[in-house]
Length: 314
Image (tube, rainbow, N blue to C red):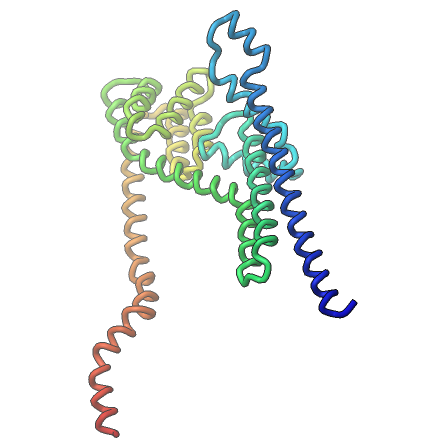
């Protein structure tokens, strides 16, 4: 057997190996998809559920969602880390993003596992179909990186967006609280009234205020309830309000005057933050001007003169 025949046989065997690898991946993916669909459909149309439906009429659709959640929870332990610190950090991020359910952590790790499997499948697909391409390594690294860290990035983005929405709701809420408390309402009643009023414009902060009212009515002290609000939302600007309300509750001061003072301080802090952003603008504009604007300016201003000078020197 000469060298050409050996190279041809090696190339054919390599092609068959890649082809068999892709077919095996398709087979495994199809089996997993069929099993997942079967489990979900079995949960939707289980004999027990049909019996309950026949006895008690229509059942709540939350049972179907509960079945899907239980299915996801069963695969979540594969990705759950052993570090308690990391689990607590993810749990805190989920709470700050608005997911307060008990199974939110398990669902997050289940989704992370699914994303990791999809990223691995894409990476193997790129390896099989993009042999010899200059972008193969880049596509493989990008798919694996997105599959592993994409859920964490998306969660961080949700947390950031929710914090911004709550920060935007604080000034209006404080003004309404001042008006309600000065008109004679108690603090709990004023807090509940304000929560109902801002439900349309700021639904996220309205839900948090309702939670605070429920905790206060259940017997939790007001400073403790507001400290838990700061932890749930991650908005550090509310820490000053917690301190002032705690001091007013201890010394017996006026809640309305405390809220008015904090509102004025909060407006001053917002003005200072805006002035700080405005002071940073010239420094931030320096780099684009040096890189993009000044070269164009020198070309337009000095270009004709240089061309005339070069013609004269010829």
